[in-house]
Image 1 (cartoon, rainbow, N blue to C red):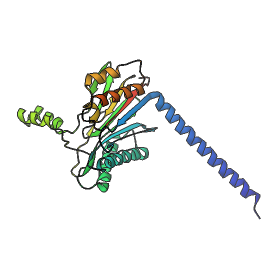
Image 2: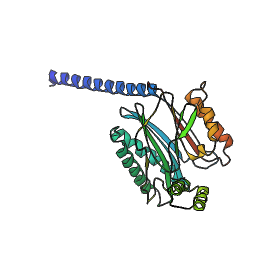
Image 3: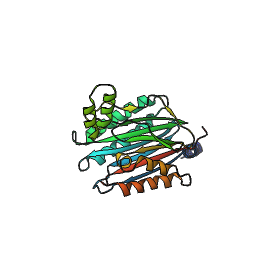
Image 4: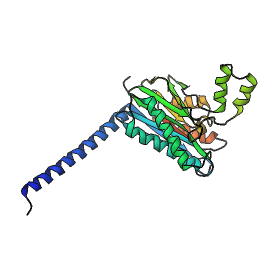
Length: 282
């Protein structure tokens, strides 16, 4: 015989579960609402004439901020595609679990190193990898980490400014030349090279470009994450012109940049771009 108290207990448990579910739904709704107001985000990706799409990107919203990740895979066959997906998924998952605005540098180092190990587990040695860029925006502060030749820039007051350096041999050569470590003829030769010095999934991977201090962003700033297929596929001044179109919304601007890249892209290689417009009060 079932005791009436058992029914009461079951009703209480079901009621408690229902309340918890409603609270979770409300929390997620509020988080999306908050970050929708502060950030307008658009992205585009295209494969060109290549057989496999090797670019991948993702955005994660949580109370500790918004994180975006963009990866450009490298390697033959499926290696590049697998590498970019694994990198983005690994970093995104870790941000959901451990992302903390107080320890962003620690998070980036842990996430990028973990992503590199995960790629090595899945891809034959030195056969694949990815250039990866991740940004975290909390309130009006932006932090970023990068490995490879993807690029971060910001559009403010009608001017597009590059924020990142990257790890192509040409960029490293410029630093060494200015520091007096190599001669001018050596630097000029290196500038012609398009190879990468570091990338995620590399056995000897060790260098991560991380913003030393958070970058303060202002209302109406547009943060741009883009792969090499985009920033080499369109002139800088043309990207500035499109970004400066005040009549177009962020999705239209993103689409227009990519259409122009496709029209001008002689090699028709993979390309991806993400725009993040800050609409906060500051």
